[in-house]
Length: 311
Ligand SMILES: Cc1cc2nc3c(=O)[nH]c(=O)nc-3n(C[C@H](O)[C@H](O)[C@H](O)COP(=O)(O)O)c2cc1C
Image 1 (cartoon, rainbow, N blue to C red):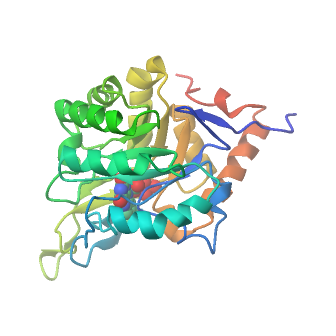
Image 2 (cartoon, rainbow, N blue to C red):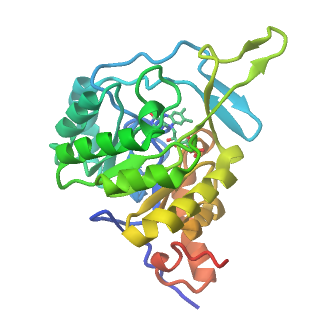
């Protein structure tokens, strides 16, 4: 019987203590969860998307619960680069866990400017490139569905961030996600994260209007998990494994068993999103649960589990 498990993960040049991240937009900038969770116990932390200028986001209502999930149409509401540097960076500087800042924008130039400025900060371990937000009129998902644009934006941002790891976050709303993943890796992505939310709609039948002011929103939570696991496995088999590019898998993870599914499918790490709103401590519990799984399955090193799907 195994007693100790090595949960550390080599991730695009970083060493993570364990394979659990929190997903962008669900834990703010690291301070919001501090009363509930020891953020430093995580493998890594990913911030809410940051854009060059502050954004108010979409009008309310911009969240609605669904069966086994939720729709959000936040629209990248955020404090903007300068306020982030002044007010949020000091919080991040106190964290000991590797922090990825998620970057969004409307033009390639905007992405480059934000990523360049942020990657100059010692406290920021890497950049996550959000080219998959379904809730904005300009930019967002538009960059992430065309391989040519994925290539252009990835190589421009990689040039700007230099040696720091660049993780590209993929949209599930494409015909073949491997084409997009390959475009990102060929253009210099050091890691991939998937999936972002699925564009969806809820209708108020009395009013015969969409519930969200934005009409559509992004579906997240357990409802999307089997599709997300499939997409992670596809990208792992067709792109990431042969190129040695790590994947952060996400979509509906609520417990250690869910996270383990993603790791077996090929993710080097798993990220917890919507579940943080229901149980803020769940990411830390998931770390313990993965350890228990390894012990009961005689796995001494978490790496043995990555991509271990027997078919
Ligand atoms: C309220 C909310 C806000 C989000 N904001 C962002 C964001 O700013 N940037 C981003 O890349 N993804 C954002 N996401 C997507 C999540 O990071 C994640 O990819 C997605 O929700 C799937 O994981 P989950 O089912 O565990 O939530 C957001 C998701 C939710 C629910």
